[in-house]
Amino acid sequence: MFGGAFLGWLRTRSPGVGSVSTPAANALSDLGLSLFIAAVAIGAGGSLIATLQAFGINLILAGAFVTTVFTLACFLFGHFVMRLNVAENAGATTGVMTGVAIAEVCKDAKSSAPAVAFGLPGAVSSLTFIVVGLIILAIVP
Image 1 (spheres, one colour):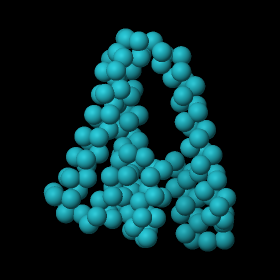
Image 2 (image 1 turned 135 degrees about the vertical axis):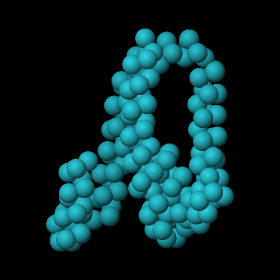
Image 3 (image 1 turned 180 degrees about the horizontal axis):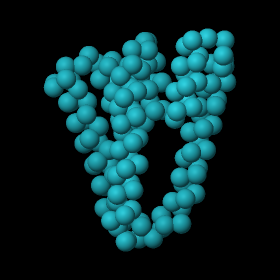
Image 4 (image 1 turned 120 degrees about the vertical axis):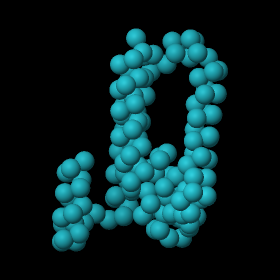
């Protein structure tokens, strides 16, 4: 993370450093995401069948419920409480869930404005995901 922040700062100071074409950057981003998903799937594959046998459809329904309810709650909180405009609100809501969707949100908005609100929720949700995951692994036998 610190390396990425340092290189990003260095690129703002001298734009010639680390210059990568947009198609190459997109390909690297997609490849990195695919490798991450593959690594997680390989790690979880051994216990997936046992978990599905133990919890069955309840696990799938709980995942759908949590994903839907909290995404809507985040968007409604941004709209009614924080009074964000639609572009910023979509970027923040996307940042809470996944980084892949921000490109689609920016494309639909025909602007990069949603990306401005993406960074902080994305970082906080990633950190929260890791910490809560470690806590759950420590609690559950």
